[in-house]
Image (cartoon, rainbow, N blue to C red; front, side):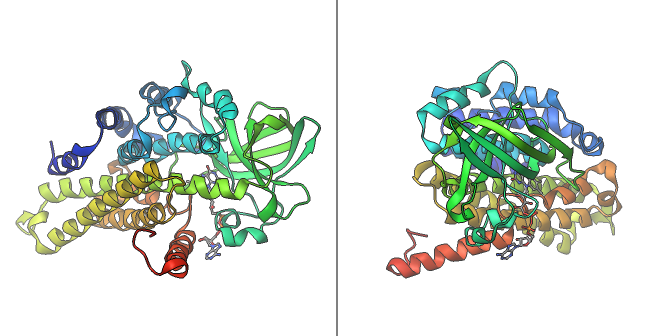
Length: 412
Ligand SMILES: Cc1cc2nc3c(=O)[nH]c(=O)nc-3n(C[C@H](O)[C@H](O)[C@H](O)COP(=O)(O)OP(=O)(O)OC[C@H]3O[C@@H](n4cnc5c(N)ncnc54)[C@H](O)[C@@H]3O)c2cc1C
């Protein structure tokens, strides 16, 4: 066991046995099945998809980890999901996002608290074979306009939905939707026809085998190549009115709630990416002799390793603390997950960059896998809130606490 593992084990002492067991099983899966294939998966064609890995992850419960036990879930909470995401991302964040995007696809139904919707959709993820989901928000003309609440009134040309008897009819186009090419269901954010987006945004569950749904081309991404991000077209797609999540016009609240639930797990993904880079740097600097001593004995290198490990540890503590609050507060808090993601996304890029430089030419050569880590490190700063979106959310919390009843640590 490495020093890093030992330190990490200590962190887990206070967690329930099912969470520790799940983390251990996912760690073994990540190290034994994903890590050895990560470089190969990265270099495959941009639309290649490793269903075999997904099915193995499904056996571990990764496609239903966030669901409550009554719907086949593991009951490990957001903390358990975050610990699993760090392990997966330390091997390959693209694989982590396949499962993360499925959980996000499930999130609106989960958050709705609507037993009718939950009993229709959530048990579908506990079958013999893996079923994936996706969460379709981003559009051609509306990216951050659907993530930053203050932007939403400027959103234009959104996918629309109108009621026709017992059905809703969808028309429009979504882009960069993780899992859209392979998912069975999507939670889709649409605007009720004729309404302003701030009043009309609505979430609806769409089976992707519905007539009128077309899965568009898969994006050729710079990183996260193991998961597929693609377009989704809706042309007069009809779904029963029962598929609405919440009510018409409640989409913005659901978007904010799902962001607050998901951001700590994205912070965990970034922590895993940074940990991968740190582990590679620690190993290399311990073995590589230049100037007559191992690199780690040069003071400047030691300082870099110390900075990197402090960042990874701090990032982990932030996501764990945020996830714990998400598990124990209703509604989930906005501040802690945003802070955890804001920090983790930045340090993943910094630590990956530092590791590439510490490995010299080996950092730059594909077969060593670290240039992949650097490319991957930029992914999480785009989805589930860019640094600019997170900064606005964080500052909003600071001033809200101040305005309402004076600055109060408990509120923030
Ligand atoms: C790996 C990956 C996976 C993804 N998966 C999904 C998915 O499953 N589902 C989905 O719906 N989308 C997904 N996306 C898309 C992602 O959500 C969007 O790319 C993101 O919301 C940004 O939208 P955009 O690309 O249109 O950027 P734009 O909206 O054009 O933003 C460009 C820049 O402007 C900044 N900006 C915008 N408004 C403001 C403001 N008010 N103040 C300051 N700065 C601002 C942004 O922060 C950003 O830096 C994924 C993206 C990636 C990279």
